[in-house]
Image 1 (cartoon, one colour):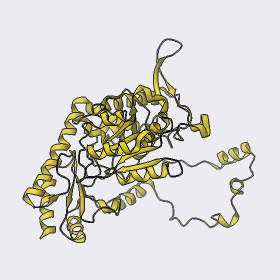
Image 2 (cartoon, one colour):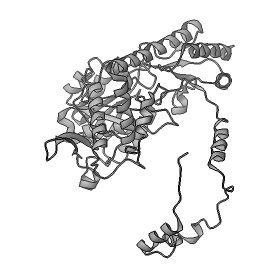
Image 3 (tube, one colour):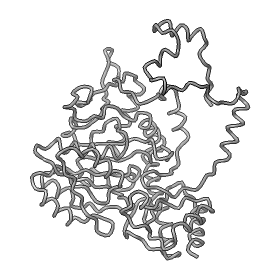
Image 4 (tube, one colour):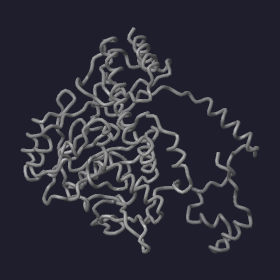
Length: 450
């Protein structure tokens, strides 16, 4: 509970006098009377703060916590306590991300460090100060490649993208002369031969290609030869990557990407109920003026001391309006600050170790479910921390059994989009899951299949 001291009647009167209103009700005269709430709010009588705390604690104790093996874009990771301690400081906490040009040196430096961290893990030289989420970042990257090539109108998108990303892309480009041509999957991945055929079909209208790895099934796409093929077709290559995977797996730059995007939730942000998080976007220097949002730069002040400034706000809506590069003119600054606190806390070595722990934990549960339980892997081959299985049991029995064990068993892909087969379950295993929890999952799976 945050202590709250209401305004006194004298303070309210002083405020009304200053703005020239006779009463608080006068502030709402523009709202039709029929829409105004006129009766008193039905609230219980006042209580002592200690009694309120006890009541809230009793309500909180009615919540049931479960072990989370669900992913699908939001993951349950270990978060160092320093993240909440620092991001909870009043210097950082605001009602919303700042739309106005920021001048606070503390926030600017934190966002500068966020950009530096994103550039380092993606291998690309320039990052902005974050976007709203991973799906938004993917859409903005597609807009960047379209704007960077005259008379282009085709973006090839991997069929293994997360359905929510596909949905956002469809919304972004619904009323524009843009074709989002989907690259069909083959056994849960997109083959290079599929890409090359689509590149030939797109011809000179090609702007770029977007692929996600790990993909919606958790499988790692083999992007060998992709960048070369896309660049030979005079297009640009966009890789959407799980940021935590970059501690152990090839970076977007190593795959030859021109732009890297993704969602930063795995970097020190709880799953909550699906958000908020932040999106990251990084690119080469040739595309920097096509990048949406804001870039914080390092400079010196009039006394020659190190200082931070908003270096670039490339043609945002409040500057160029309809000619704007993007309508994104803000950032998820608090989430981005949490990300950089997390990355600073774990450090380069810890970042790599956490990434490797995700790989080994997922591999262990996957092996046991397939070899010991007899479940079928939907997409063979390497994964990061998520994999998809075919579940032969009735879904209700499976879910009810795991609910009885206090476990969320995964994400049914048909809940993300009804085009997926109903029997596909995506299971996420992070470094947070213990050996005891893996044993419990196996025991529950045996019971659900009995």
